[in-house]
Structures are given as C-alpha cells and as structure tokens.
Length: 115
Image (cartoon, rainbow, N blue to C red):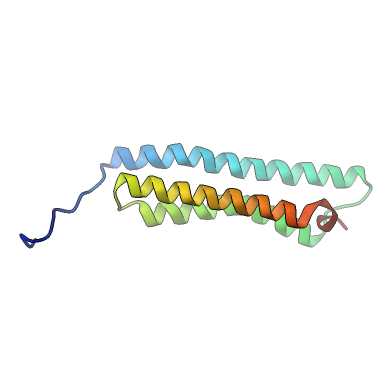
C-alpha cells in the first residue's frame, strides 16, 4: 500500500448482511405483491369468462422477476463498498422497482393483459 493512498474501508460482514436483509424484506414484499397481482388478475379474468393473454402472462411474470433481479444487481454492485453506498444502491434499486411496477400496470392495465 502506498503511503499517499488512504486505507481502504471494508464494511463489516454483519453490517453488509443486516443492510441486505432489511432491504431484502422490501424487495420480497414487492415480489409478493407481484405474485398477488398475477393471481388476482388471473381470477379477475376468469370472472369475466376470459383468460390472460400470453403478453399478460409475460408482463405479470416480469413483474415478479423485476424486484429479484434488481435486488441481485444492486447487492452485487454494492457488497464490497461502504455501508452508505450499499444502502443507497439498494434504495435506488427499490425506487426503480416501484417506478417500473407502477408504469407496467398503468401503461398495460387489465384490458391489454386479457384475451
């Protein structure tokens, strides 16, 4: 290590896990909410004597996968950084998931998801 460079700060493992678990609960809630949307919209379509289209299944399954993928990417990008950066990356990912989920259901709506 060069004397001119500051010592690299390493976040303790327990703090990394704590941050990951706390934010993971919020991401899990988003994924669970997406499962509820899939089940609820499927039941709604059945009550209308129709079914979800292939596009509708894709959008709803994408809504389930979105928080999982964003969480994994945010964790991967932040796991070797400081605790503040980890938390900010996971928070930014959570905001991204919220915006994309809202956009997905506002833009497509029930009318485009059923046959």
